[in-house]
Amino acid sequence: MARYALAGAAIATVLLCTAAAEAAPFKCGKVGGDFVFGQEANVNSLDQMTSSTISTRNVAMNMFESLMTRDENTAPIPELADSVTEAPDGLSYTFKLRRNVKFHNGKTMSSADVVASFDRYNKVGLSRSMFGNVSGWEASDANTFVIRMKKRQPTFLLQLSSFSIPVVIVPSELADAAPQQLKTVGTGPWQLVDFTPGSAVKIKRNDAYTPNTNFEERTGFGGYKQACFDTVTFRIVTEPGARLAGLQTGELHGVEDLPTKAINDLKTNKSVTLLPLQNWWIQISLPNVSFAPTDNLAFRKAVQAVLDMDEIMDAASDGNYRLNVGLRYPNNPDYTDAGKETYNQKNPALAKKFLVEAGYKGEPVVLLTNKDYPSMYNAALVMAEQMKAVGINAQLKVVDWPTSVQMALNTDKDWNFFFTGWGTQPALGGLDTVQFLINPGASYKPKDNVDDPDMLAAWQDMNSNPDPAARQAAFARAQKTAFERVYAVPFGALTKVQATRANVQGFKPFRIPRMSNVWFSN
Figure (cartoon, one colour):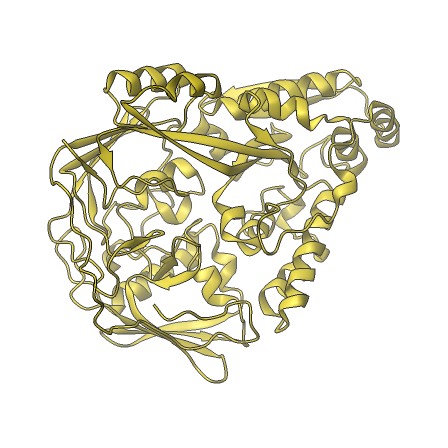
C-alpha cells in the first residue's frame, strides 16, 4: 500500500503496490475448531449501515467489507477497491474493484452492487452526512465505481474509510431493505450461521473467500485475511463474573472485557493471556436538548458544574481509568483541550446558581442507562447521586443496551441523559467523533433536528478547508462549542482488558475483535 498524506492540502493518487515481496502471505497455524468469544453486550442488529453500537461492529465487521477501511495505525487503505485515484481537480474519485469477489450467496460483486449499497446508505446510513459534498456516483463499467464531488474535499477518503458506521457493500437486490432489516450477506471471510438476540451469534468460515493478495498480513480491519476456525460463536455474557469464570474454565476462549479486580490474580494464570488496551473509550453522557429540562442551557451547565469525574470514573472502571479532557486522547496528533474549563468542575455552589438561572422546579431528570455495560450503569448511578446533592430530581431508567440505543436514536422524549462510550470514533479521528454531533442523527437531539450553526460551520471547515492547521482549529472550535453548550459530557478514558486462553494464537486487541488470522495452537 503506497503511503499518502491525508493531512496535506490534497490527497495523492492511491494505488496498491503489487510488486512481489519476499515474505509469503499469512497461513493459518492450524485450521478448525469453534472459537467461543464472551461478548459483554447484546446485539441490537447486524445491519452495519444503521447501527452505531460496538456490539454490532464486533460481529458484523467480520462478515461485511467496504471499498476502503483502516490499517493497524488507522490510516486509510483499500479493501474491496483494488485502487483509488483522485482526479487532478479533486472533483472525482475512481475506484477500480478487486475482481472475482464473491458475496456469501455466491454472486460475484460488481460496481452495480457498490452503487446500490451507496444508494441505501444515502437513505438510511447513520453517517450519511459524509455525503454532504458528494454530487453523485456511478458505475462506468462492471469493475469501476466513480464518486463525484461538488468541490474538493481533502478529508473525503478519511471519512469513507471509517469503520465506525461503514458503507458496507451488499448485493444490489438488498438495497431497499428497511433500517436494521438488512440480510447479513457480505463479502467477508466469515458468514452468518445463526443470530439469536440476547443469546449468541454464530458465524462460519466462508470457503469461497479469496484473500486480498495486495497484502500479506491482516492489518487493521483490512489486509490479507483468512478464517482459520471452522466457526466462531459470539456468546452474549453480560455479567462480568460469568465472563471471568468462563475464561478460567475454558468454556470461553476469549472475552471482550474482564473485571479490573480480577486482573492481578489472572497475571499468574498460565492458561490465560491478558490483553490490555488503554484509552478503550471515552465514558460519556449525552443530553437530550429537545426535552425539558435539558432543553435549557443553564440547566445543562448546572449538571456539568456539579460533576466529580474521578468519582464517576472510579465507579465506572474499578479505578482503571484516566481523566481525559477532550474528545480525543492526549497521545493523538489532533488532540486538543479546548473547553477544558468546563471539565471536572466539582462546584456545587455554581451548579445551584445555574439551577436558579434555569428556573428549575424539581422536575424529573431521566438518566437512560443499561446494565449490559456495567461502566455505563455505574457512571449513571454516581452521576445521579451528585445531581441529587444539589437538588436535582435525577431518576434512572434502566433497560438493556439495544433498547437504550433505540430510545436515544429514535425518541426525543422520556429521557434527558443517555450513557454510552465513544471508543472507535475517537480512535479513528476528530471527524468520526464530531460527526456524532451533526445531523442526521446528532446525539444531543437538537430541537427540530436543526444543527447548531456554529457546530455545523466547524464541521464544514473540518471537512473542506484545504489548510490542515485550519481543519485542526475547526476541530478545536467544535469541541469547545460542544462543551460550552453542553452537547456532550465526557467523564474520562476507560482502560479495557481483554483476554484469551493461552492456546489461542494471533488474537491482537483492536477496536473490533478480529476473528481472521486467529487459530488454536492445540
